[in-house]
Image 1 (cartoon, helix red, strand yellow):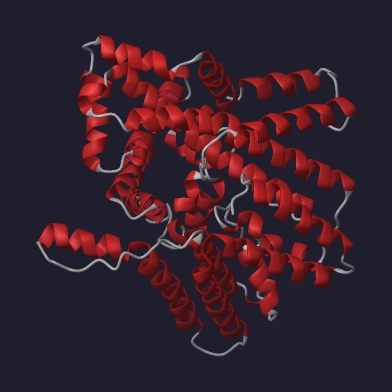
Image 2 (cartoon, one colour; image 1 turned 90 degrees about the horizontal axis):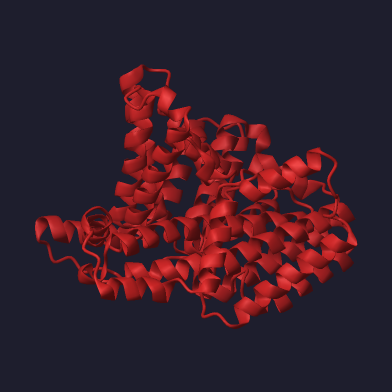
Amino acid sequence: MVFSSPIFLFVFLPVTYLVYRLLPGLPLRNAWLTLASLVFFSFGQLPYLVLLLISVLINFLFGLWLQSGEPHRRLAAGLASAANLLLLGTFKYLDFVLGTINSLAGAGLDLPGIVLPIGISFYTFQGMSYVIDVYRHPEWGTKNPGTLLLYISFFPQLIAGPIVIYHDVAHQIRDRALTPELTLSGLRRFITGFAKKMLLANTAGEVADAVFAMSAPELDFRLAWLGAVCYTLQIYFDFSGYSDMAIGLGRMFGFQFLENFNLPYTARSIKEFWRRWHISLSSWFRDYLYIPLGGNRKGRGRTNLNKLIVFFATGLWHGANWTFVLWGLWHGLFSTLEGIGLIPKRLRESPLGHVYTMLVVILGFTLFRADTIADAGVMFSAMFTGFSLEAANTLALIALLDAKTVFLLAAALLFAFGIPQRAWQKLQERGGPQWAGSAAGALGYSALFGVSVLTLAGATFNPFIYFQF
């Protein structure tokens, strides 16, 4: 089950919300949300529900150890982290490791063909952050297994984040209020994310999928750049749309999650891009890997090495494929070049800084989207050398860009660069119409939801990109 499926929109969510509102007292409501979350997860991969419960149990037991005041707390934290990484490594990376060994050493190792458990990267990182935080601050832990189960399994952010830190929501699990304002705010945020996915991400994705499926002779620089730009738009609106929906759903049940995106395509450096893109993951790697490695406290050389380690881990976290690893190192390279001054600060403070950043990001996402490094090479070759304009390529370009697609891609570009958002903000600052909570606002959001549902009805299944991670 996914947020953009009819069964979720018209059965699961209404039933879950109505029962939640009818139940008296927070303990019963929390128990209901936990049960609903486990049902939600089971719709996708029922056999892996046991794996999720094992992960929660491991982190709960190690959390008790770390709270007990017993000796060897460092050992407990290390074993907990190792157990989490073992689960993640076995179910996500074992085939990748064995396949790499076969390729490099000519071995004939059998690949187990493990199906990737949905959400494992997200709930594993949440579990690891919990035990590490309890190691650092024993008073932050919980002795209630139900509390930890709800924290890790809560359905809005279970499958694709944002990654929520236990300490940020622990007080909300114990005590939260559900106001009409918060509910309406959550509903509007959910509709916004749903529209991003159905109208903008899916439109861009159709074009990107068509281009990335083309062979080298079918591509020229126009098609290749179109595909690369469209995928860059798709992944942003797909993932930020999911995050909007998760944040909105959280508000509808009284939870307030931190933001996960802040107009990343307006950044003027790779460093700034990562402060705006997938903020919860960037913060996780900063707090639980970069700073423990020494951060920037041990000299320039060690700082640059720490950055590369973090970006290597970031790429590998996204998937068991060398294209993801190289994508992470690509960003690590430019982050390092910025840090040592080889990409001048004056460039990054000028409009050219935006051009430079977007070029790095688009080329990086081209590598990210490609199935293999060789496929990425085909795209890069077409982008920079495919200047022989054949009639067949022109016809393919025209076929991809019908009027509706052009309109929605233009809207996606405007919203990705924050132009309508900034114009609306300035209008509000000048005393413009406050319609978000008005009848006109309700009508506008209802219309947006209706158009998105109609688009869903006529679309083929298109899951969120980050479900695969």
